[in-house]
Image (tube, helix red, strand yellow):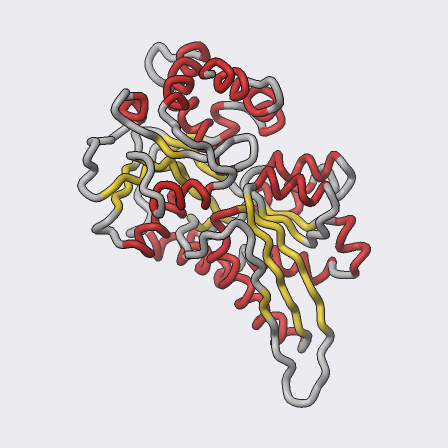
Length: 333
């Protein structure tokens, strides 16, 4: 597992024999927990593209907090494709004319080729006996989760907590706000991205529980051992749906549209879906998912559409400047 905040990964396809192949270069601007996933997706697509076209493709990956990455693209980072944590971070690019506003309709499942969900990661033996959302607001518990202002994963974490509280018997927005306010009082540090939060919990040893995507929690267990960390699945959680898109303005300028589109379509192929599952993201393709039922337990989960409407509404209500998250953190000062 790589812990630095942005490390480019360059993958080269080799020309066959003495034929000189065309060299296409793509930049994939992605969010924190996809580093390992796209190392393998890139390599597999590179091999497929070489077989099909005889051309060389070089894919460079840039990783960081999803919101921060979206701002970098707005500021001029030349992304051919974006693979971010949530739809709003791509919507802001569409609002500035970098791609069509109907971008989600271009690929299946609202352009989200795989999913995850929000779980808790605790240390061996679960010493604080953390089993569900109410345990995160106990005075003896420190919670690690990143900053929703910069991290897409953190926004999913926030909404999972809020949605659980609001869906309780007698739950409403006021009770959800009170619960989430109490939760963030137990957060000692807000890292800018999900991988940074994992580093804080695992490498620095801070906190009693990490709120994380299932994919990140499973990866941590793989890297550091199931005997070191345990995953707790809460009674209710959220379906995280990270989307992908071609950045029209960039590919038109660079002449990379065909390759960029093929790369994203590859993510939906049986090979691309199997790679996603291998890296602990839940595949959309039923035939692939059937081979990984042992890895992904059934969870009681709601979606953004179920609980909140759409991402534009969510962003304006909870995460925009002066929104509920800002109000909550201001109240803590």
